[in-house]
Image (cartoon, rainbow, N blue to C red; front, side, top):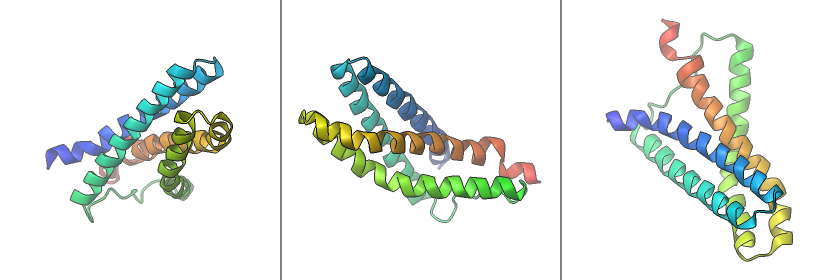
Length: 149
């Protein structure tokens, strides 16, 4: 069970790595380095798949024991956290579908369709990756449950 308790930290690291790879992929395509962009984005997708596996394992093994946001921060902090969490969860559900469609068009060299869907996929995926790290920081670093005692 000790390894399972490390998964939130692993997941935050994977989200951070996905954020970095998304940004690198963006820069590479702006520089016209299509092949490097392709492999970077496929790597990012792989990192996201590993994240999803770890996330599902964590929640399957700790059913009912998830980390709740503590009550001690001011209301504006709590409401901000829940607003961020809500948008994160809703958009995270869309990312796998958007990413697969975007990658499909990229690999098929259907550049017009790839660019059209990537204009939606990239900012949503980036937001989900960044807010994933922020959710972790809020729960485990900024507002740990132990600080309330």
